[in-house]
Length: 138
Image 1 (cartoon, helix red, strand yellow):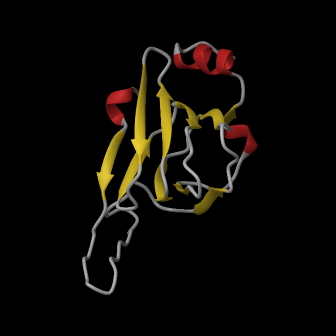
Image 2: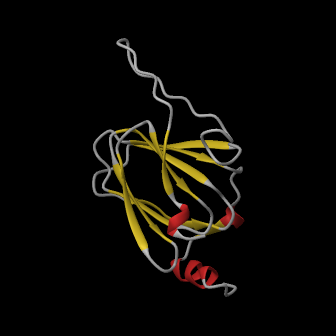
């Protein structure tokens, strides 16, 4: 996978004077079956999150409230995505290192994942990730 495979997905937004509604459907708006949902919140100012990669997991990351930056690294280049709208999701395919930072006060990051938690799917060390992204066994 490369950074070209990462993209912002615009989710449906139904506008109403009583408030807006956005919905997400697996295999329709998200290019994978959703097996897990989790969210990050109450991130202290100046803190960063993530700093890992996944071998097989697909994710869609959404700023449900506030904003934050996602830096993606495919082992060759890096790109920063600023997420600040609850109707935009960042699709992250496998083999992407991710760092999250620059959280605004009250930011909530929701992540839709293609599989259940599996520690064996993680790269926790960036050098191991770089070796695997080049096709070497870490």
